[in-house]
Length: 308
Image (cartoon, rainbow, N blue to C red; front, side):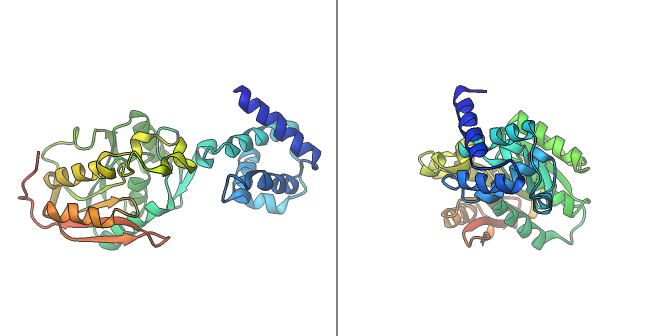
């Protein structure tokens, strides 16, 4: 444990002890107060950390607000609270994140799955939910969130999920096994480099790096702790999207679809990229906050020239 964290633990421990007892109700109150300057969800964060320490559901906190934590539990809670105050994301602290109602293990090797990405799942299901034996490729799978969500909705789909990061691949494989969705083919590949040249997919999905390296958001919030390789792309954040869009034409079936998650200001640029490469009817879908988030189009012919 670092000296900085030890100091934080001592300070927080004294603060929590001086202002009251170690009941659940008091710790929620104090934790919320301490987190408010750095978190937009201070009360929720505190409850998640308490639930994690107690190994109970959040409903337990409401049912037993008078319960007191023992010394070991209090120390553990203070340690986790200190990490959250320093800005570390809740998902990295607890190693868990829910996505599409699926509990996923997360690590610092992957992005944290976000609710906005569920919009991509919704778009795919809207177009293909009734299809059976559909072939799908998830590029840059990370935790496996997108591939696993799709597999949970339709177990007949044949899904490949790849990531360049070997740690991410292992994590996605572990999530698939834990969710009993291990039929998904998860393996390491630098985009299409390890995918058979003659393989074809009905749907290709990707949440690639799309943030410009000069974006000020990289120094704020949770993204400060996330791997930059999964966030940043050159050419104003569009380099990986351009590469994937170009190469996807070689791997899509006729009338196959390519879907991207992207930044909220990139909808028009992504539509233009897809249209310039011969894709048809490029469409952008907004996320829960009303921001452009998912852009997709279909390849009506497989004879398009691949720009090397």
